[in-house]
Amino acid sequence: MPDDHALRGFRALVPERTWSTLCKLGFRRAFSKGEPIFVRGAPASSVLLLTSGRVEVGCHTEDGDYRLIALRGAGDVIGEVAFEVGGVRTADVFALEPCAAFAVPLGTFERVLVADGVHRELGRYVAAKLQRAGQDSVDMLSLPPLRRIARLMVQLADLAEPGHDPRLIPLSQTRLGHVLGLSRSLVAGLVAQLRQEGILSAERNLTIERFDKLRRHAYPNRE
Image 1 (cartoon, rainbow, N blue to C red):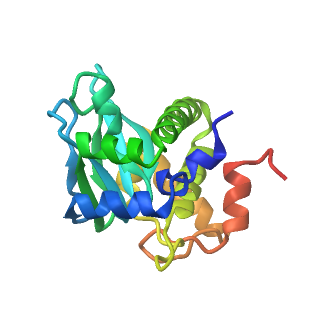
Image 2: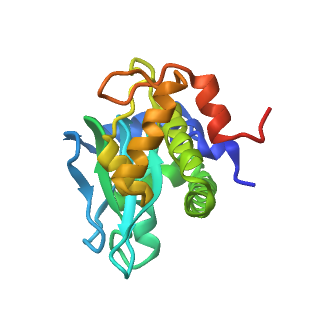
Image 3: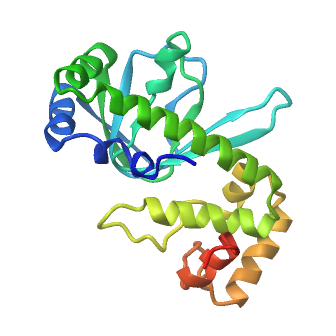
């Protein structure tokens, strides 16, 4: 099983002074909704410390299909895997909403972690992320469509930071179908079902009204 502590985000694994030092040594970046943050195959020169907003990590397969790899939120580090595989970006990353981050050069990032004695925490964090991403990819390909949609919505809601309404899903129905590999008509039908059950509001935007019912759809085997 993944290390649940590591899955809460890198910021939760290190002392606050470490996170603050890294932010001070980086330069601030802001991204608008839908803006590409990283492009797969591009040279990598820094990591990003995400301080606000949620992002989508994905890639295209050899067949041209898009595959969602992971979702990330405030407190996560993005782009650290690139330095283990030849210094290139291994996935596409998009801002799901307005995001803020600090870009920190790799050398600076590693130097601070070593100086603060928390370099091993990065290994735990990366291992947990990769394990979780692998399991999520398997689940998203094998689970029934309704459960896949519900699970993605729950994950997005759980990543919402304080001050952001977790009920608001930062994806359109069209985008929801794209990241999950589902047709527009199937997504529309399942969203209509969730609205009929009172789980989603009747508004055009995807807005959660009943988290308890949504979680039961997402994880029916949990109490």
